[in-house]
Image (tube, rainbow, N blue to C red):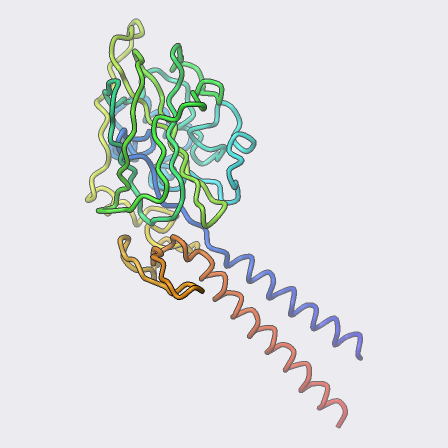
Length: 313
């Protein structure tokens, strides 16, 4: 009888552990808006009937859902090990098969026209996080008709770096500087959270001009980011939440506004500002789930105790 009770207690604890793991939040919250990323460009064209040949091919390869999930190119537990986790040729999808259409090696992706010198980057965000942005440009001689590899990026000289920028109007805006290049190049943005091992990735095609066009190639349409109205219209088709940590249900959100912030007291009596939505307060959902787990475990123990007393009678 005692062994049976012990097995029951272990089962209760194991069930609680499974609940804790299942309830861990999954975030998916951004992509480069300027220069517009491939996924944002194709979403702006309309996932169901894209205009450009490149976006049509991306949909044919990976389906339309990847475009509705435009803010979800991420690895939840990468912790800065980007090169170890993302293989060559899979940079734009971050190795996620859902987004494999974005990895297609084509020279006709819609590109943002740019030039050397200062550039203001805009990152479209649906839920802010503390963290660091790093944007890399491909090296001179990059061939856009080949799958981009890590060796194609000038990793020693990021064109932009930003630590904990403040989101405003749904955008992180930060300065950078583009070097001398010609023709089509690729910008690769990595947003590594500091309050979580999660990171987000995006590829943006850019055109410095002066390059030679492929013979017989159909000109790609000008690059354009989705409007707020387009984002709102497609949110119901997304499988990721557009606000808050995310809980596996794209239709729910209990988080405050994207620009909300709260002050919390520190141990030394000072205060610190944390993003009320997800930045800095990343442990809150885990604490809540942990509390629920303790209550569930306590209920199981209480139940076993009552059964034990009843049997003794």
